[in-house]
Length: 458
Image (cartoon, rainbow, N blue to C red; front, side, top):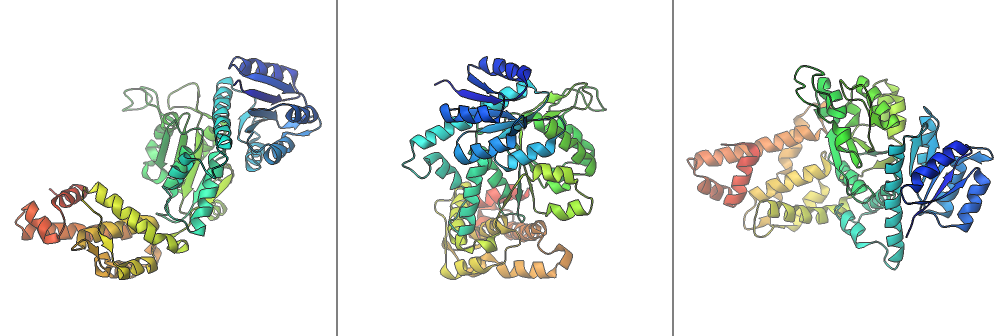
């Protein structure tokens, strides 16, 4: 069935340009010059997509966006904003707009935006056909990757589903190890960009002097060592989603360049003379609260408001203790599969109580580390409380200065040091016979070999 698009703009030249462009995409187009005629069209026809200017003779495009969100929730609607009026675009996204495009309209960006919106519309139609089911199997299978049924995680899953239907920038907040990247992947996988790349980048892991090249790319000869053209992360994510993890670690000079790239939907590679259009959805994440950084002048307020259109808070493990038993059993199965063991060990009742009552400074990531260690330490396929080694973790945490407590990286390093030392001690005791060393530790040879590789022990 041919898609039907509604264009709302008071300028005849722009209406004609947009009509011509979208008609060439084999779309049926209806144009409206003001709010009244747009409302009339919505009552008489079924549309797959709506594109409206923000400034109309008898109202604003924001009024139309609100009405569409309330009366036609399955209709993706985007706005056309004046050049440099990014605040208008952010407001439109907050009240339900699918996306935005700036004047003068870049037709290549517009075509990509429309194609993305129509994919979303097709998905909505398929879902409505199966309205006898609460969720489509695809959605359920994907959301099951976020383990648990607590009230906190159910609220999170509901919000992820809603965010997947929009192109609005999302800021995922939450403590380290709480699953921010998994949430970002789900937003991508459940949305219309699922068949394009998901590119995660840790902003704190890129050396400052390489940031511009990594994000935007460079041209051959633009600096010493640039022996060929190179695309940046924005180009790699074109058509898909770019996740900016630990975005608070971006230096101020890169914040300015990032803001421009997001607003203009284009990047300027180092050494290039022209900007390259990119169609990327931005999802950012940080374990730090950005507002205090803005107040302290360490994070630009304009970038903060651009990234934080919608916030998705990820709950900590202490807010979802009811999920720990289910998570622990699932992670044990995954660890067993990864280590090529036959069956996962069983967690004793006392050990499960200890897991449920432990104070997790590293959240889900720490729980996984504890279980990996317990699989190594347990005997007879039964994990007891002592195999969890929670007391040593607590001691290590209390031995740290107050300023370092809660840093899961320090905790992870401590735990890994213990495990590495146990492996090395077993090797020495077994005179470097790997099979015998694995027997001394009570684990399979495959698990032992995996751990040697993990820690780089030769």
